[in-house]
Image 1 (tube, rainbow, N blue to C red):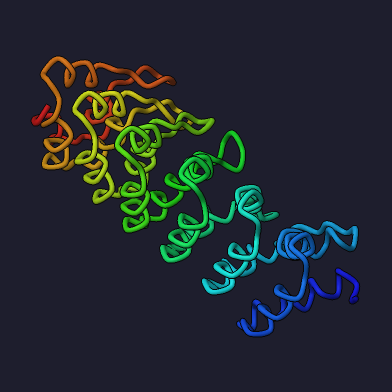
Image 2 (image 1 turned 90 degrees about the vertical axis):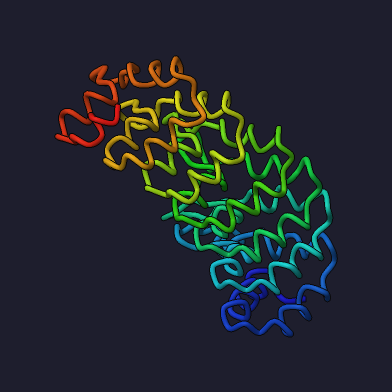
Length: 273
């Protein structure tokens, strides 16, 4: 009978204090409709005052890494409502969805809970979701923060075709998973992507131009000045494909990867090429 705003405040407080027993009492004592409202509505929304920075109960639980509460909320939510609930974005400053939060902070256990709460189509749809046109997908966020185990889990959760689709998703800036891995210097993830693709897809991924300058991943990898890594990148390619990548200019100054190496005085890389 309590006012919904009061109950929301109490619920968020218990989540932060990890009073999981009390959280379960509150959620199990409400109808399915009220339970969904409790876990999805922000405290400010119910009071008519939307101040940035506050989240719904599921965001609060994930930020506290309270896996038990995340599991409980998804278990008590109707299957048809789970996907829309998981697509909720936190307010400023990060505007991330639930799974993006889990990928950002390396909460692989929560990623697994989310995976088991959805059917296959819902899982793919959630993975492909970005906060907006310029934001990164869950996979790209995991790569950005070097969460290799989560990247491996996402790969294992998909068949080869769907995994390859995830690798070719671009942000509004043209950034793909490989591009993000190159920018963030995530060598282990680059190796993972290489080992899980065909030579044709690898060639395709190396052609995507992203970022403000329109660089390809090869432009970025050249800057590492590591001939062993360059050789790893080159091995799956034919000579014609390798040559084609080397003469591709960026979108800003039409500079090729070799121009980049020369400008930075990377003599080992130039000699390798």
